[in-house]
Image 1 (cartoon, rainbow, N blue to C red):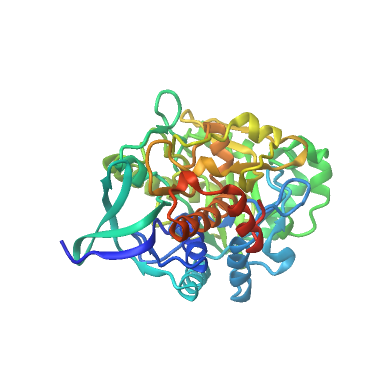
Image 2: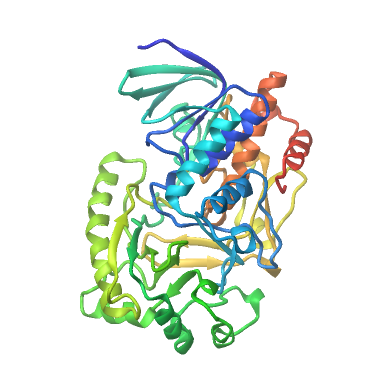
Length: 463
């Protein structure tokens, strides 16, 4: 064992929830370390080539996520890694999110790194979480392994932004995994294609609107043909979902996998380059190392078959080429902690607001079932719902706050709250709460939420 290092706050996991949490903790005066297994920051947005943030707005067009999350977007805009229009948030005809925020992964790596270092966050990359040390029910140390060997890192408060609730699970905290049978949502492996003729593809959309998901949320109140008629440029439809007939025809010929009924691609800030979301890996447990190895192998096979499908069946893609593929699997669902409070499906659908909310969500409740079927529930009246602070605090483990998709939530609620904008909102709240714990000698369950909400408002967040 190497020498122990001491911090006020240690954030495990440098996806977007962890990055924002670390920045928030450091800006609020805590000596903060952010650690991750990768050699760069951003998690699923960078290693996973996710392609966009969803969604900074409710369906009414009201911005519901701001603060550090918007700073990240602004930083990307400044370096050409996000669109300048609409503060980076493109209105979207897709119909399950008012806005889509395309982000270049290479620019995002640099922007997140700069924001962390400017805030005074210490970084420890290329390091794996090997476990935790506990004192009673409190996490007191984090075991990490890297090229220097194994070490134990001490902190007053930990933030579990692993996406899998690894710290909470290692400490014996209660959690749920998947549905009642333990089956989780499908996993995807994303890729990017170049030399796509987006003008030609848009002409096909306008001529065949029934082949696409356009204005699915009832709040929009327009037909597919009305929405398609209003599309003037491919930037007006930045998140394309559909090609139902083509998928069905290709499946009948054995030329497309059977795991989904539609394909998705996203425009990027690079003309002619798109992100494909069309693979579907079923039956793999994201907390099982062997299962994730098999998923990676199947995913690599699928992305080339998917590329062939786009070349053969989708207008504008016949001369496309494979640019790159993600270096990390896109996991939609993993462990969900049992917290002091639970975000419910009914609360999300109703657009419920609570006096202890610390972030907001608005994307449709999107669940990719283990059967391959994708189910959506929509938030009423174009509204957004609140995420209570207690959903970030484990019921039976002290010394740790969760940020990201592992929040305490019902499964369909998690299908919305797992998106990038709300997890960044949770991250800012977790970081600010951790700093309050350090300053006042509190456990996360004892944080005065009114004071926390005041801090978040002062620092630009929307609660």
